[in-house]
Image (tube, rainbow, N blue to C red; front, side, top):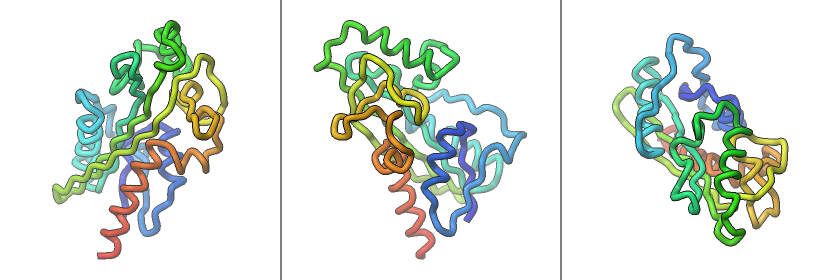
Amino acid sequence: MEIVIASRNKGKMKEILSFGIPSIIFTSLEQFPTIGDIEETGLTFKDNALIKARHVCHATGLPALADDSGLVVDALNGEPGVYSARYGNMKTDEERYMLLLQKMNNVPDNKRQARFVCVMALVFPDGREYIEEGVCEGIIVREPAGDNGFGYDPVFYIPELGKTMAQLPLDVKNTISHRARALQKVKNLLETFIGE
């Protein structure tokens, strides 16, 4: 079975491909240059994941897997949320997480709870649609740390591991991240299809 990953984000691609699901060939959106940018007009992660997966499935005629994910910070009333990738109209990951830290400058240490949320939509040409979600709880630190990962990983601290997401090796991140948790559910789903 061939599935198109509805993303050009190299970090996301690397995480999904490293998961490896037997009998599934994942194809990058890069293989379909005629598909332009997909406008994410949804108000929730689920809305945006479905918008992307439906668009790519329709354009390619192949099953499509899309995720929408982001950081939800309690002290900022859920910001940046669905706007995580375009927070404050900043251009780089570093500018975005520095804006976040600036906004949280006066938030006390015991009020810095946050979570990464990932919603994955798997859409088939025959109209079947599946939604899976993964969540990873953590705390926003005051200073970035670590060189791995992407996005807000350097400022997202996981208390039980004593490290930021960006300080974790990929194999560890791929067992505990929001995307890994959603992907595990997608993998279980796909394995049931293959077994049928």
